[in-house]
Length: 365
Image (cartoon, rainbow, N blue to C red):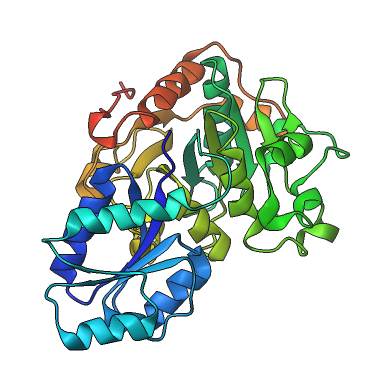
């Protein structure tokens, strides 16, 4: 899999920004991980996400603290814009749309000059905006489904402080954790991840959160560094994210190929997901988000309301099952055979498809 350049886009004109974003995303060579409309938003996006390249209007880039490459973009060439680009330290100046291919080449070169192994995995972030919707259940059983399909899967705990993967998978208390990678930091490799990952009986390789006494020492960028490293040595990475909208969560969302938002069929869950979608809008996740309805039962709110509220059908509808809580209480996954396992097998197939190819599975009868 070709490694994608991670781009922060800062353009004042919204229509031009959308054109550039769609052009880069469709190229298969770059991904816009955040957009900004003013210098403050740009500085915050660069600080949090550490992109490979910033594409910005020269006037917006003047206050930018250097991080990766800077490419200046304008809709017309002028002496003033060229001078501003030089003052900002831009490595290139391009006029949109006439020089868009040159812009793409400039973006691609940022990956070619970057050291490190090539990303081979599809990265899937599982997020629930409201507590109790079953994010842990979905993340663990989706990872197990990838394992059953013969794909090497690494499951990464995204919440070092309140991580639930240890309990949900029955991992031993003395299992190695991500805390051992604190000293390694940005130098973390897939080999380091393999060394600390706990191998579950299902075949999942799990990077666990440390104990409470160490969790506070985990730097916010470590989880994203682990995800990036794991993605160079396996087929699929599943990141189990917390509800919080902190720096670590945003970085993991921005790096994901697909984001699964877990919902339950109630008003509070839909409201929380709506607020999260608004909060994540600067990350430019359009086209990468899919919805999983969990614990579905007959109710005034139905799976069809997902399309009405969010504009897309759910990827899968998981029915309420009393066996889930019993299994999790004992640190076990549901059996690899049965209705729920088949649903996760289908979800694992669909989540690797292009978003437009996914179709809703009617499971509530």
